[in-house]
Each structure stands twice: as structure tokens, then as C-alpha cells.
Amino acid sequence: MEQVIEQRRPPTFGDWSEPNQMLFDQQRYMGASMERALKQSYDRHEQWNRAHMYAHQEEMNNRYFDYHKRLMHDAWHAGQPVTSDPPIVDYSTLPPYDGSVTYPNPPLHHSQWVDPYTSMGTQQASQEGDQGGSSSGAFGFGEFSEMMTSIFGPPQPRYY
Image 1 (tube, rainbow, N blue to C red):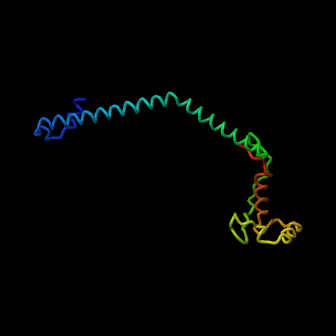
Image 2 (tube, rainbow, N blue to C red):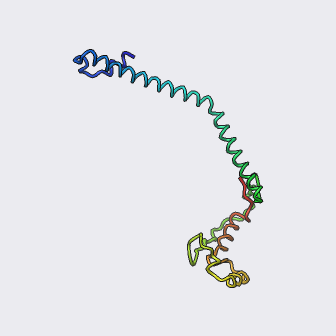
Image 3 (cartoon, rainbow, N blue to C red):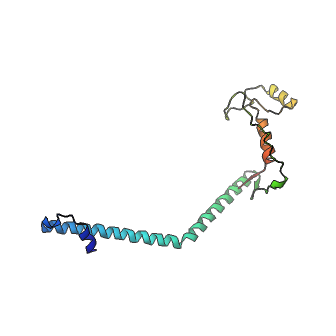
């Protein structure tokens, strides 16, 4: 510790008065001891964290599992369909992607918050539904749902 204090002394240290030298040395000693205490504390915490790393990881995994079980339980109480695992997709049975799917462009308005049926009369919407057109509503979302169904299959219940 004395070596650390002596290394930190300025070149004009010998010209100072004795009380100033003692005060300077005392402050440097306190600073060095605080640095050493902080390093020891850091090393101790690092060692403790390494020793308990597995327990921390297990705790995070358990909290994640519990959170998703709670979500599934709430969805079940709300009457929503719940599956615990995602459905298995056999990619060998899917048709090959030939690039022929085109994304629809909304013809009237781009907002997702505007209801497409409010801009048209209900009779007009029902007539279009009777005609069997591929686009439903004013925005042509039927093409989008057909494209998503062709890529991912029919809609499945939510899973966690």
C-alpha cells in the first residue's frame, strides 16, 4: 500500500509542509483502500454469480413456463381454443412455392383501423359476397387471406 501511495505523489511533494504531506498521503491511502474494497466486492459478487448461474437460469425458465401456463389458463377461461404446443408441419407435403402469389394493394385507403364494410352499403357488400369475388370488402382482404392460407394452411388455434 505504501508503494501505491508513493507512486501517486507529485514531483513537488518534498517541498510541501508536513501537515499537507500527511493529509495528501491519508487521502491517497483512503482512495487506494476504497479501490481495493470495490475490487474485492466486485470479485466476490462475480464469484457468487458464477456459482449461482445455473440456479438463476433455472429460475428464469420456471418463471417463463409459469407465465405461459397462466396465459393458457386465462385463454381457456375466456373460451379461446388453446393448444400447448404448436402443430407440427410436415414440409415435405406442402406444395412447392412457385412465386405466383401477389400481394394485394388496398384500392381505397391504407389504414388498418378503418372498417372496410362501413364505406360500402350492407347491400353492396352482400351482393359482392354472393358474386363470389376473391376480394372481400372495399380493401380486397380476401386476396390476402387466400395468400396466407396458401402459404401457411388454414388458421390454427393460438399456442404458447
